[in-house]
Length: 191
Image (tube, rainbow, N blue to C red):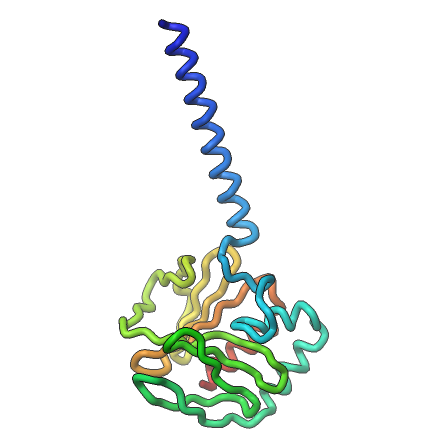
């Protein structure tokens, strides 16, 4: 009877230890490479955050592309279904819809997608911790009504309330070239 108890205890310890180790290894992998299902590696240029794919394919062109965006004229564009308002977009940009009420910025000339503009009837609280795409971000700074958050590991999130219920949300992965963060910052500032 005593041997049976020790055998059962040993078996339980082995399985318990293996599941803990497996969980810890999985967690470590998620921390290192990210476990979001929407990674720019799987994205096409025309999708949301497609600028990451463009930058990966043509790294030498990112700086000149940013310069061309800054040179283009800003045009007032109407947005919204339930609530109509205007934002400023570079001349060759449009808003592409995804879902029922959300949009993302899209360069129709180069076929490149950028960050999203999200509709939310719930007032977003930008103080302290903000959760986006399953990740928690801590508020780092506020400048010109643009809230910058950081997950402490790999991502920077820039948010701007652009109307009563619409928010511009740009998520930047530190593995991307810094020029992408500059492009996102420029576009959000000028919305």
